[in-house]
Length: 114
Length: 114
Image (cartoon, rainbow over all chains, first blue to last red; front, side, top):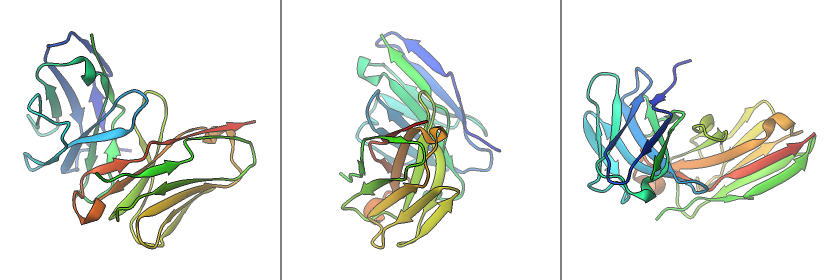
């Protein structure tokens, strides 16, 4: 069964460094998302993306964050200058033909900022 | 801010018992999705409910979407130790907007003792 994949599974970085989290959505899906989950807290929406544009972003998704679809398969989340509070699990998701479709999640990247 | 209140937060039961998990909101959702999440992994979709009053069954799991599309429930019959895990509800399209943004409940940690 097709699935969303994410790399790396765990990323450790120093505060102030840039990180890029990578996702390969399900191949025929057109809508892509990033969520994060701080340890012990709810899963929170960050951004939705379609047709090479951001559809919606949350207040968490400030200027330090950016997303990109650099080629036909990858979808990336970049954090320009990481802060301690960026430590979380980051989940990529994709849906097929509309924002209203069911979202399928990847296994996540655990980001640890030291 | 759209909130999805999930209850109970913790549930510890014996094998064979029945249980119900609830998700409630003051917002109307276009759809509601139930996920199960294992530690350190991404949410795995169980079901999507779309129509008010809809009932879906998945073996021993029964999912219901409220008539007003503001609430949902997950009922498990004759729980088994393999049902142990974190169950999440997530609503999409709160208030008729933000169709691509899932609002998650805080989750229910279910433990089924043999």
